[in-house]
Length: 481
Ligand SMILES: *Cc1c(COP(=O)(O)O)cnc(C)c1O
Image 1 (cartoon, helix red, strand yellow):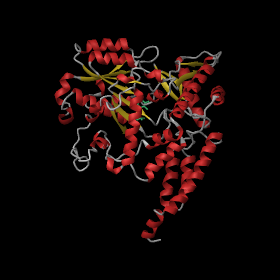
Image 2 (cartoon, helix red, strand yellow):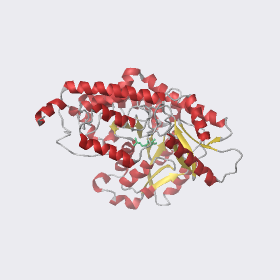
Image 3 (cartoon, protein in one colour):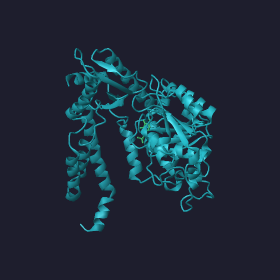
Image 4 (tube, protein in one colour):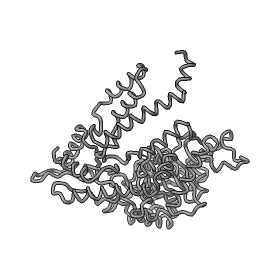
Protein backbone atom coordinates (compact mmCIF):
# COMPACT_ATOMS: atom_id res chain seq x y z
CA UNK A 1 0.00 0.00 0.00
CA UNK A 2 1.47 3.40 -0.89
CA UNK A 3 1.72 5.92 1.90
CA UNK A 4 -1.11 8.16 0.77
CA UNK A 5 -3.64 5.34 0.66
CA UNK A 6 -2.38 4.25 4.07
CA UNK A 7 -3.06 7.73 5.40
CA UNK A 8 -6.56 7.56 3.97
CA UNK A 9 -7.18 4.20 5.58
CA UNK A 10 -5.80 5.16 9.01
CA UNK A 11 -7.93 8.30 9.16
CA UNK A 12 -10.97 6.69 7.60
CA UNK A 13 -14.12 7.19 9.69
CA UNK A 14 -15.18 3.63 8.86
CA UNK A 15 -11.88 2.24 10.14
CA UNK A 16 -12.44 4.26 13.33
CA UNK A 17 -15.91 2.81 13.76
CA UNK A 18 -14.54 -0.71 13.36
CA UNK A 19 -11.82 -0.08 15.95
CA UNK A 20 -14.34 1.31 18.41
CA UNK A 21 -16.51 -1.78 17.89
CA UNK A 22 -13.48 -3.95 18.62
CA UNK A 23 -12.68 -1.89 21.68
CA UNK A 24 -16.25 -2.29 22.92
CA UNK A 25 -15.89 -6.07 22.84
CA UNK A 26 -12.45 -5.96 24.50
CA UNK A 27 -13.68 -3.76 27.32
CA UNK A 28 -16.82 -5.80 27.86
CA UNK A 29 -14.74 -8.94 28.25
CA UNK A 30 -12.19 -7.16 30.43
CA UNK A 31 -14.70 -5.75 32.90
CA UNK A 32 -16.53 -9.10 33.02
CA UNK A 33 -13.31 -10.90 33.90
CA UNK A 34 -12.38 -8.33 36.52
CA UNK A 35 -15.77 -8.53 38.19
CA UNK A 36 -15.82 -12.32 38.09
CA UNK A 37 -12.30 -12.33 39.59
CA UNK A 38 -11.28 -15.02 37.11
CA UNK A 39 -7.88 -13.51 36.40
CA UNK A 40 -5.10 -12.23 38.62
CA UNK A 41 -5.29 -8.75 40.14
CA UNK A 42 -1.65 -8.17 39.16
CA UNK A 43 -0.01 -10.15 36.36
CA UNK A 44 3.12 -11.99 37.47
CA UNK A 45 5.57 -11.00 34.76
CA UNK A 46 8.94 -9.37 35.30
CA UNK A 47 9.83 -6.00 33.74
CA UNK A 48 12.14 -7.74 31.25
CA UNK A 49 9.36 -10.00 29.96
CA UNK A 50 6.97 -7.05 29.68
CA UNK A 51 9.51 -5.04 27.75
CA UNK A 52 10.09 -7.87 25.33
CA UNK A 53 6.33 -8.27 24.81
CA UNK A 54 6.06 -4.56 24.14
CA UNK A 55 9.10 -4.30 21.92
CA UNK A 56 8.25 -7.15 19.56
CA UNK A 57 4.99 -5.41 18.58
CA UNK A 58 6.92 -2.42 17.28
CA UNK A 59 8.54 -4.38 14.48
CA UNK A 60 5.75 -6.88 13.88
CA UNK A 61 3.11 -4.34 12.67
CA UNK A 62 0.75 -7.20 11.89
CA UNK A 63 -0.98 -7.66 15.21
CA UNK A 64 -4.57 -6.47 15.10
CA UNK A 65 -5.93 -3.62 17.19
CA UNK A 66 -8.05 -6.13 19.07
CA UNK A 67 -5.03 -8.24 19.99
CA UNK A 68 -3.00 -5.20 21.02
CA UNK A 69 -5.87 -3.92 23.14
CA UNK A 70 -6.37 -7.31 24.77
CA UNK A 71 -2.66 -7.55 25.49
CA UNK A 72 -2.65 -4.16 27.23
CA UNK A 73 -5.78 -4.96 29.22
CA UNK A 74 -4.81 -8.46 30.29
CA UNK A 75 -1.26 -7.53 31.28
CA UNK A 76 -2.23 -4.40 33.19
CA UNK A 77 -3.07 -4.01 36.84
CA UNK A 78 -6.73 -4.99 37.31
CA UNK A 79 -8.15 -2.16 39.38
CA UNK A 80 -11.71 -3.15 38.46
CA UNK A 81 -11.30 -6.46 40.31
CA UNK A 82 -13.18 -6.13 43.64
CA UNK A 83 -10.14 -7.61 45.40
CA UNK A 84 -8.12 -4.53 44.42
CA UNK A 85 -7.69 -2.57 47.67
CA UNK A 86 -4.37 -0.97 47.06
CA UNK A 87 -3.44 2.58 46.30
CA UNK A 88 -5.51 5.75 46.21
CA UNK A 89 -6.19 5.18 42.54
CA UNK A 90 -9.80 4.22 41.81
CA UNK A 91 -11.14 1.90 39.16
CA UNK A 92 -12.46 4.62 36.88
CA UNK A 93 -16.17 4.83 36.18
CA UNK A 94 -16.23 3.29 32.67
CA UNK A 95 -18.23 6.18 31.20
CA UNK A 96 -15.68 8.63 32.63
CA UNK A 97 -12.94 6.88 30.69
CA UNK A 98 -15.05 7.12 27.54
CA UNK A 99 -15.52 10.87 27.99
CA UNK A 100 -11.76 11.05 28.28
CA UNK A 101 -11.46 9.22 24.99
CA UNK A 102 -13.78 11.80 23.41
CA UNK A 103 -11.46 14.62 24.37
CA UNK A 104 -8.45 12.73 23.09
CA UNK A 105 -10.06 11.51 19.90
CA UNK A 106 -10.82 15.10 18.96
CA UNK A 107 -7.49 16.49 20.30
CA UNK A 108 -9.07 19.05 22.59
CA UNK A 109 -7.16 20.62 25.42
CA UNK A 110 -4.90 23.60 25.21
CA UNK A 111 -3.55 26.65 26.96
CA UNK A 112 -5.93 29.00 25.17
CA UNK A 113 -9.68 29.20 24.97
CA UNK A 114 -9.91 29.26 21.19
CA UNK A 115 -8.04 25.97 20.84
CA UNK A 116 -10.46 24.18 23.16
CA UNK A 117 -13.55 26.32 23.63
CA UNK A 118 -15.83 23.61 24.98
CA UNK A 119 -13.14 21.94 27.11
CA UNK A 120 -12.17 25.28 28.62
CA UNK A 121 -15.79 26.09 29.42
CA UNK A 122 -16.25 22.68 31.05
CA UNK A 123 -13.19 23.27 33.22
CA UNK A 124 -14.46 26.69 34.26
CA UNK A 125 -17.88 25.33 35.19
CA UNK A 126 -16.41 22.43 37.19
CA UNK A 127 -14.14 24.83 39.09
CA UNK A 128 -17.15 26.95 39.88
CA UNK A 129 -19.03 23.95 41.28
CA UNK A 130 -16.08 22.71 43.35
CA UNK A 131 -15.32 26.18 44.71
CA UNK A 132 -18.91 26.59 45.86
CA UNK A 133 -18.69 23.20 47.60
CA UNK A 134 -15.63 24.46 49.48
CA UNK A 135 -17.89 27.21 50.72
CA UNK A 136 -16.51 30.12 48.75
CA UNK A 137 -18.59 32.90 47.26
CA UNK A 138 -19.24 32.66 43.54
CA UNK A 139 -17.30 35.28 41.61
CA UNK A 140 -14.61 35.69 44.27
CA UNK A 141 -12.59 32.55 43.68
CA UNK A 142 -10.80 31.02 40.70
CA UNK A 143 -9.00 27.87 39.75
CA UNK A 144 -7.32 25.82 37.10
CA UNK A 145 -7.09 22.19 36.03
CA UNK A 146 -3.69 20.52 36.29
CA UNK A 147 -2.23 17.12 35.54
CA UNK A 148 -2.08 15.82 39.06
CA UNK A 149 -2.04 16.87 42.67
CA UNK A 150 1.74 17.18 42.72
CA UNK A 151 1.64 19.89 40.09
CA UNK A 152 -1.30 21.60 41.82
CA UNK A 153 0.57 21.69 45.14
CA UNK A 154 3.76 23.06 43.55
CA UNK A 155 1.75 25.71 41.71
CA UNK A 156 -0.11 26.85 44.82
CA UNK A 157 3.10 27.14 46.79
CA UNK A 158 4.74 28.99 43.91
CA UNK A 159 1.91 31.53 44.01
CA UNK A 160 2.38 31.87 47.76
CA UNK A 161 6.13 32.32 47.39
CA UNK A 162 5.68 34.98 44.71
CA UNK A 163 3.20 36.86 46.89
CA UNK A 164 5.26 36.71 50.09
CA UNK A 165 8.62 37.37 48.40
CA UNK A 166 7.87 40.10 45.90
CA UNK A 167 9.83 39.92 42.63
CA UNK A 168 11.15 36.43 43.43
CA UNK A 169 9.53 35.26 40.18
CA UNK A 170 11.80 37.65 38.29
CA UNK A 171 14.93 37.77 40.40
CA UNK A 172 14.94 34.34 41.93
CA UNK A 173 15.37 33.83 45.65
CA UNK A 174 18.82 35.36 46.16
CA UNK A 175 17.56 38.50 47.91
CA UNK A 176 15.43 36.49 50.30
CA UNK A 177 17.71 33.72 51.48
CA UNK A 178 18.86 35.80 54.48
CA UNK A 179 15.24 35.79 55.64
CA UNK A 180 15.27 31.97 55.61
CA UNK A 181 11.88 31.28 54.02
CA UNK A 182 10.30 28.15 55.46
CA UNK A 183 7.09 26.19 55.25
CA UNK A 184 5.25 24.21 57.88
CA UNK A 185 3.42 20.94 57.34
CA UNK A 186 2.70 17.63 59.02
CA UNK A 187 5.37 14.94 59.31
CA UNK A 188 2.92 12.72 57.41
CA UNK A 189 2.32 15.16 54.54
CA UNK A 190 2.82 13.93 50.98
CA UNK A 191 6.42 14.04 49.75
CA UNK A 192 5.46 16.45 46.99
CA UNK A 193 5.22 19.29 49.53
CA UNK A 194 8.90 18.97 50.40
CA UNK A 195 9.65 18.47 46.73
CA UNK A 196 7.87 21.73 45.92
CA UNK A 197 10.14 23.55 48.36
CA UNK A 198 13.17 22.07 46.62
CA UNK A 199 11.87 23.22 43.25
CA UNK A 200 10.95 26.72 44.47
CA UNK A 201 14.39 27.52 45.80
CA UNK A 202 13.17 27.46 49.40
CA UNK A 203 15.03 24.23 50.07
CA UNK A 204 13.78 20.92 51.37
CA UNK A 205 15.66 21.49 54.62
CA UNK A 206 13.38 24.51 55.17
CA UNK A 207 10.32 22.31 55.46
CA UNK A 208 9.30 22.24 59.10
CA UNK A 209 7.70 18.85 59.65
CA UNK A 210 5.48 19.07 62.68
CA UNK A 211 5.05 15.82 64.64
CA UNK A 212 1.61 14.23 64.55
CA UNK A 213 -0.80 13.70 67.45
CA UNK A 214 -2.44 10.43 68.53
CA UNK A 215 -4.81 10.59 65.52
CA UNK A 216 -1.82 11.24 63.26
CA UNK A 217 -2.91 14.82 62.57
CA UNK A 218 -0.48 17.73 62.59
CA UNK A 219 -0.01 18.59 66.28
CA UNK A 220 -1.27 22.16 66.55
CA UNK A 221 0.14 22.81 69.98
CA UNK A 222 3.61 22.01 68.69
CA UNK A 223 2.90 24.03 65.52
CA UNK A 224 2.15 27.08 67.63
CA UNK A 225 5.32 26.63 69.68
CA UNK A 226 7.40 26.36 66.53
CA UNK A 227 5.75 29.46 65.04
CA UNK A 228 6.31 31.44 68.22
CA UNK A 229 9.97 30.46 68.33
CA UNK A 230 10.53 30.91 64.60
CA UNK A 231 11.47 34.60 64.72
CA UNK A 232 14.18 34.08 67.31
CA UNK A 233 15.36 31.03 65.34
CA UNK A 234 15.71 33.28 62.31
CA UNK A 235 13.06 31.39 60.35
CA UNK A 236 10.51 33.09 58.17
CA UNK A 237 7.62 30.65 57.96
CA UNK A 238 5.34 31.98 55.23
CA UNK A 239 3.04 29.06 54.53
CA UNK A 240 1.28 26.25 56.34
CA UNK A 241 0.00 23.17 54.53
CA UNK A 242 -2.83 21.08 55.93
CA UNK A 243 -3.32 17.52 54.70
CA UNK A 244 -6.85 16.42 53.92
CA UNK A 245 -6.00 13.69 54.26
CA UNK A 246 -2.51 12.24 54.71
CA UNK A 247 -1.54 9.31 52.54
CA UNK A 248 -0.18 6.76 55.06
CA UNK A 249 -3.22 6.60 57.37
CA UNK A 250 -5.82 8.87 55.76
CA UNK A 251 -5.79 11.31 58.68
CA UNK A 252 -7.50 14.67 58.25
CA UNK A 253 -5.61 17.58 59.78
CA UNK A 254 -7.64 19.97 61.91
CA UNK A 255 -8.18 22.53 59.17
CA UNK A 256 -10.09 24.91 61.42
CA UNK A 257 -7.21 24.96 63.89
CA UNK A 258 -4.67 25.44 61.12
CA UNK A 259 -6.75 28.28 59.68
CA UNK A 260 -6.65 30.11 62.98
CA UNK A 261 -2.85 29.71 63.22
CA UNK A 262 -2.57 30.98 59.65
CA UNK A 263 -4.61 34.04 60.52
CA UNK A 264 -2.67 34.77 63.71
CA UNK A 265 0.77 34.38 62.13
CA UNK A 266 -0.22 35.77 58.71
CA UNK A 267 0.63 32.64 56.76
CA UNK A 268 -0.53 31.36 53.42
CA UNK A 269 -2.88 28.47 54.18
CA UNK A 270 -2.82 25.70 51.59
CA UNK A 271 -4.89 22.52 51.83
CA UNK A 272 -3.55 19.41 50.12
CA UNK A 273 -6.94 17.83 49.52
CA UNK A 274 -5.74 15.55 46.74
CA UNK A 275 -7.48 12.55 48.24
CA UNK A 276 -9.97 13.93 50.72
CA UNK A 277 -11.44 17.14 49.29
CA UNK A 278 -13.93 14.97 47.40
CA UNK A 279 -15.59 14.06 50.70
CA UNK A 280 -17.26 17.47 50.34
CA UNK A 281 -19.61 15.69 47.93
CA UNK A 282 -21.06 13.67 50.81
CA UNK A 283 -23.45 15.29 53.28
CA UNK A 284 -22.44 12.53 55.66
CA UNK A 285 -18.69 13.10 55.53
CA UNK A 286 -18.13 16.70 54.49
CA UNK A 287 -17.59 17.58 58.17
CA UNK A 288 -14.09 16.06 57.82
CA UNK A 289 -13.16 19.18 55.87
CA UNK A 290 -14.46 21.78 58.25
CA UNK A 291 -12.20 24.83 57.96
CA UNK A 292 -11.27 24.26 54.31
CA UNK A 293 -13.28 27.37 53.42
CA UNK A 294 -10.60 29.44 55.13
CA UNK A 295 -7.79 28.12 52.91
CA UNK A 296 -6.05 30.43 50.47
CA UNK A 297 -5.59 27.53 48.06
CA UNK A 298 -6.79 23.93 47.73
CA UNK A 299 -5.45 21.05 45.61
CA UNK A 300 -8.15 18.53 44.72
CA UNK A 301 -7.69 15.34 42.67
CA UNK A 302 -10.74 14.18 40.77
CA UNK A 303 -8.81 11.06 39.76
CA UNK A 304 -8.95 9.74 43.29
CA UNK A 305 -12.27 9.89 45.12
CA UNK A 306 -14.30 11.20 42.17
CA UNK A 307 -13.53 8.04 40.20
CA UNK A 308 -12.41 9.57 36.91
CA UNK A 309 -9.25 8.37 35.13
CA UNK A 310 -5.92 10.00 35.87
CA UNK A 311 -4.99 12.70 35.49
CA UNK A 312 -7.62 15.20 36.55
CA UNK A 313 -6.87 17.70 39.28
CA UNK A 314 -8.10 21.14 40.30
CA UNK A 315 -6.19 23.89 42.00
CA UNK A 316 -8.49 26.47 43.55
CA UNK A 317 -7.69 29.89 45.01
CA UNK A 318 -10.04 31.63 47.42
CA UNK A 319 -9.07 35.02 46.00
CA UNK A 320 -9.23 34.92 42.21
CA UNK A 321 -6.51 37.56 41.92
CA UNK A 322 -3.97 35.22 43.46
CA UNK A 323 -4.47 32.72 40.66
CA UNK A 324 -2.41 34.99 38.36
CA UNK A 325 0.54 35.14 40.75
CA UNK A 326 2.17 31.77 40.14
CA UNK A 327 3.18 32.54 36.56
CA UNK A 328 3.64 36.11 35.53
CA UNK A 329 4.31 34.94 32.03
CA UNK A 330 4.20 36.95 28.86
CA UNK A 331 3.67 35.14 25.58
CA UNK A 332 1.94 37.58 23.29
CA UNK A 333 1.62 35.05 20.45
CA UNK A 334 -0.55 32.93 22.73
CA UNK A 335 -2.07 35.21 25.33
CA UNK A 336 -3.08 38.69 24.41
CA UNK A 337 -3.87 40.67 27.55
CA UNK A 338 -5.55 43.26 25.33
CA UNK A 339 -7.66 40.66 23.62
CA UNK A 340 -10.66 42.64 22.41
CA UNK A 341 -12.90 39.67 23.16
CA UNK A 342 -11.72 39.67 26.78
CA UNK A 343 -10.97 35.95 26.69
CA UNK A 344 -7.68 36.13 28.66
CA UNK A 345 -9.74 35.11 31.68
CA UNK A 346 -10.37 31.78 29.92
CA UNK A 347 -6.82 31.18 28.71
CA UNK A 348 -5.72 28.52 31.19
CA UNK A 349 -2.09 28.70 30.15
CA UNK A 350 -1.57 31.92 32.10
CA UNK A 351 -2.14 30.06 35.35
CA UNK A 352 -0.59 26.63 34.80
CA UNK A 353 2.85 25.17 34.37
CA UNK A 354 1.50 23.37 31.34
CA UNK A 355 0.98 24.75 27.88
CA UNK A 356 -0.83 21.99 25.99
CA UNK A 357 -2.82 19.84 28.37
CA UNK A 358 -5.51 17.18 28.24
CA UNK A 359 -9.19 18.04 28.49
CA UNK A 360 -9.04 16.94 32.05
CA UNK A 361 -12.53 18.03 33.05
CA UNK A 362 -14.58 16.26 30.42
CA UNK A 363 -14.74 13.00 32.39
CA UNK A 364 -15.99 14.59 35.62
CA UNK A 365 -18.50 16.76 33.78
CA UNK A 366 -19.64 13.74 31.76
CA UNK A 367 -20.35 11.40 34.68
CA UNK A 368 -21.83 14.19 36.79
CA UNK A 369 -24.19 15.05 33.91
CA UNK A 370 -25.02 11.40 33.20
CA UNK A 371 -25.42 9.98 36.69
CA UNK A 372 -25.78 12.98 38.98
CA UNK A 373 -23.79 14.42 41.84
CA UNK A 374 -25.46 12.15 44.41
CA UNK A 375 -24.15 9.12 42.58
CA UNK A 376 -20.57 10.36 43.08
CA UNK A 377 -21.35 10.88 46.76
CA UNK A 378 -22.68 7.32 46.96
CA UNK A 379 -19.38 5.92 45.67
CA UNK A 380 -17.52 7.81 48.40
CA UNK A 381 -19.95 6.61 51.06
CA UNK A 382 -19.67 3.02 49.83
CA UNK A 383 -15.88 3.19 50.22
CA UNK A 384 -16.30 4.57 53.74
CA UNK A 385 -18.79 1.88 54.74
CA UNK A 386 -16.53 -0.85 53.41
CA UNK A 387 -13.59 0.52 55.38
CA UNK A 388 -15.66 0.61 58.56
CA UNK A 389 -16.71 -2.98 57.87
CA UNK A 390 -13.09 -4.08 57.52
CA UNK A 391 -12.27 -2.21 60.73
CA UNK A 392 -15.08 -4.09 62.49
CA UNK A 393 -13.95 -7.46 61.09
CA UNK A 394 -10.39 -6.80 62.25
CA UNK A 395 -11.21 -5.53 65.71
CA UNK A 396 -13.42 -8.59 66.18
CA UNK A 397 -10.52 -10.90 65.31
CA UNK A 398 -7.89 -11.96 67.81
CA UNK A 399 -5.21 -12.45 65.18
CA UNK A 400 -5.29 -8.96 63.65
CA UNK A 401 -4.72 -5.48 64.96
CA UNK A 402 -5.31 -2.01 63.52
CA UNK A 403 -2.89 0.90 63.60
CA UNK A 404 -5.66 3.49 63.84
CA UNK A 405 -9.38 4.05 63.57
CA UNK A 406 -10.29 4.79 59.96
CA UNK A 407 -10.90 8.48 59.28
CA UNK A 408 -11.55 7.75 55.62
CA UNK A 409 -11.14 4.81 53.27
CA UNK A 410 -7.51 4.11 54.21
CA UNK A 411 -6.71 1.57 56.92
CA UNK A 412 -3.45 0.16 58.26
CA UNK A 413 -3.49 -3.18 60.08
CA UNK A 414 -1.41 -6.23 60.66
CA UNK A 415 -1.61 -9.93 61.28
CA UNK A 416 -0.52 -11.15 64.70
CA UNK A 417 -0.20 -14.93 64.84
CA UNK A 418 -1.67 -16.13 68.14
CA UNK A 419 0.28 -18.24 70.60
CA UNK A 420 3.70 -17.34 69.21
CA UNK A 421 6.18 -14.87 70.67
CA UNK A 422 7.33 -12.31 68.12
CA UNK A 423 9.94 -9.63 68.10
CA UNK A 424 8.86 -6.31 66.62
CA UNK A 425 11.29 -6.87 63.79
CA UNK A 426 9.98 -10.32 62.86
CA UNK A 427 6.41 -9.02 63.05
CA UNK A 428 7.24 -6.29 60.53
CA UNK A 429 9.00 -8.82 58.32
CA UNK A 430 5.97 -11.10 58.50
CA UNK A 431 3.67 -8.36 57.15
CA UNK A 432 6.03 -7.75 54.25
CA UNK A 433 6.13 -11.47 53.48
CA UNK A 434 2.33 -11.59 53.58
CA UNK A 435 2.04 -8.77 51.08
CA UNK A 436 4.67 -10.28 48.79
CA UNK A 437 2.93 -13.64 48.82
CA UNK A 438 -0.46 -12.04 48.14
CA UNK A 439 0.94 -10.31 45.08
CA UNK A 440 2.65 -13.49 43.94
CA UNK A 441 -0.59 -15.44 44.19
CA UNK A 442 -2.42 -12.66 42.33
CA UNK A 443 -5.49 -13.06 44.52
CA UNK A 444 -5.75 -9.53 45.74
CA UNK A 445 -3.83 -6.32 45.96
CA UNK A 446 -2.96 -4.34 49.06
CA UNK A 447 -0.09 -2.02 49.94
CA UNK A 448 2.06 -1.47 53.00
CA UNK A 449 3.58 1.42 54.89
CA UNK A 450 5.94 2.12 57.76
CA UNK A 451 4.62 3.93 60.82
CA UNK A 452 7.20 4.82 63.46
CA UNK A 453 9.55 2.25 61.94
CA UNK A 454 7.01 -0.59 61.97
CA UNK A 455 5.66 -2.13 58.80
CA UNK A 456 1.86 -2.31 58.46
CA UNK A 457 -0.36 -3.69 55.78
CA UNK A 458 -2.35 -0.88 54.24
CA UNK A 459 -5.51 -0.81 52.17
CA UNK A 460 -7.36 1.89 50.33
CA UNK A 461 -10.87 0.55 49.87
CA UNK A 462 -11.82 2.26 46.67
CA UNK A 463 -13.52 -0.23 44.37
CA UNK A 464 -17.30 0.34 44.60
CA UNK A 465 -17.85 -3.34 43.75
CA UNK A 466 -15.94 -4.51 46.82
CA UNK A 467 -18.20 -5.83 49.58
CA UNK A 468 -17.98 -7.59 52.93
CA UNK A 469 -17.38 -11.00 51.32
CA UNK A 470 -14.21 -9.75 49.62
CA UNK A 471 -13.07 -8.13 52.84
CA UNK A 472 -13.43 -11.23 54.97
CA UNK A 473 -11.89 -13.33 52.20
CA UNK A 474 -8.87 -11.04 52.30
CA UNK A 475 -8.42 -11.68 56.01
CA UNK A 476 -8.81 -15.44 55.46
CA UNK A 477 -6.31 -15.33 52.63
CA UNK A 478 -3.82 -13.57 54.92
CA UNK A 479 -4.40 -16.17 57.62
CA UNK A 480 -3.75 -18.86 55.03
CA UNK A 481 -0.46 -17.30 54.02
C1 LIG B 1 -2.18 11.54 45.78
C2 LIG B 1 -1.72 12.62 46.63
C3 LIG B 1 -0.81 13.57 46.18
C4 LIG B 1 -0.17 13.48 44.83
O1 LIG B 1 -1.11 13.73 43.84
P1 LIG B 1 -0.91 13.15 42.35
O2 LIG B 1 -2.22 13.45 41.71
O3 LIG B 1 -0.62 11.70 42.50
O4 LIG B 1 0.22 13.91 41.74
C5 LIG B 1 -0.47 14.60 47.01
N1 LIG B 1 -0.99 14.70 48.24
C6 LIG B 1 -1.88 13.81 48.72
C7 LIG B 1 -2.43 14.00 50.09
C8 LIG B 1 -2.28 12.74 47.93
O5 LIG B 1 -3.18 11.86 48.39
